[in-house]
Image (cartoon, rainbow over all chains, first blue to last red; front, side, top):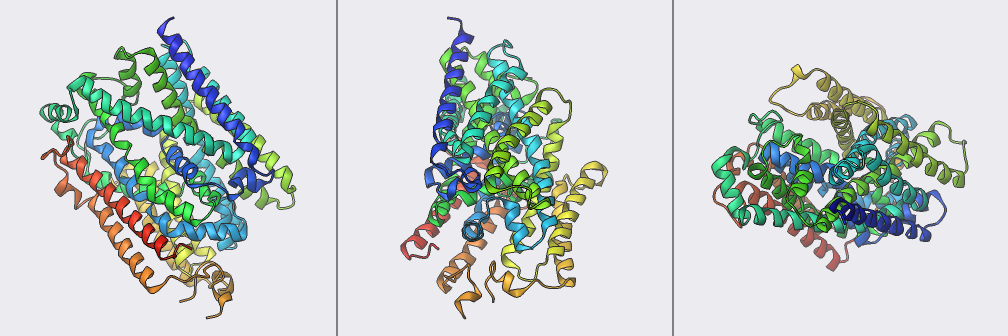
Length: 489
Length: 85
């Protein structure tokens, strides 16, 4: 049998297994929106651990991580850093959010904010910002999946075909099983990703250099500037500390506020489960280290691979590995793409219905119709993302950066909503709007840059100032209402 | 204070726990500062290699471990003293 046939069969078996896991896990949820969106708030530690781990580590981490280490060296250390601290605010805030969610029936992020600030425009604005951030993110996952298929079958399956195959499977299990489908497939996919990252990350340095230390010693001789932060920029010059540090800051703030991620707080069975998941999250995060090894391993052995993000499939296909191993790689990379893509699809459709349609026209539909509408929107959003992934020429990375800058602007509002009684709806809206606007302007006019500092940081500064000032000059909210969220001093 | 004044928080943070949380916030802030300018530039160097890693990378792994240990410790404390809420 030809090698690529074996690879393809292994990949298909993986897809089939994902489908089985996804289809059979939905049976236990009730047919309500709470069942479909929040799994009836019954998720346990193991599943929640993998949901959080696998939906953060996307095709970007799996292909982009080695790509960054390969082309930019120590710049890639920022991925390890922001993940270390990104989830920490949750240890203090998520128990409260989860309790509030149970009491008031939230299943999305915007439901919490709009109830806290009694503001419908806020809900609609959040839905728009969320979708603007999630759509390019999803599109990138699809492109990643298509790309993996195309490389390992040596072009026999085109990018559009690969993306279609992988995301048909995702659509079926998300449509049918909702968040439980996402949860159980992520557990399966997370295990596969972790196994693959550790396997390849240790194997490649040994195979190519005789060990991890010899690899780094060889690199020290050749490219010493790549073994320490801040590493290099895209164009190969030295990156600045301003750029490196602010990238960590903005990513750490945005990390836990991605709407599809934040929603998972409302799926936890209880606070103990939620806390345990957050405590053990660093054991997932550490897998960035072998991911970086993969990229470093390519620097001397495989110079001049373009674009840098293809270094991992490039290494795998050019090392004469057994076809079975290449097939497993393909499955692992698809798992990374699909485990993020499914959570985004499910999150985006839920947000569109719960936070936009529901709020703009409250009497539009009954509860059971709502779940049906979410299901069909999963398909519609999948189709739109697929259009962008294979047909459109938009610069997605650019859109994603904009999205990330915008999502991070929710951070000040999150802190204010749970700690500052005096914050007001006008303050929250104005702060968020100002932050997004500044981020947008700084992105459009790069000459405003100073020390490479991430545009989102200036957004945060303006955001916090406006949030405080506008809150102080507007009327305080009803004390009784606020006391449901923050205890009196 | 009447119970209805803070319906979401039937258990107010005990003084001991409040103290632990304050300490933790400071601890995590230091970890954050430790990984960005101006602290990390002082430590981001190649040698000495530790466990095969350049020092710059080893140091970040230590910070990750320090985060994990602190979270685990506070979780176990809360669990033992029945302050989970």
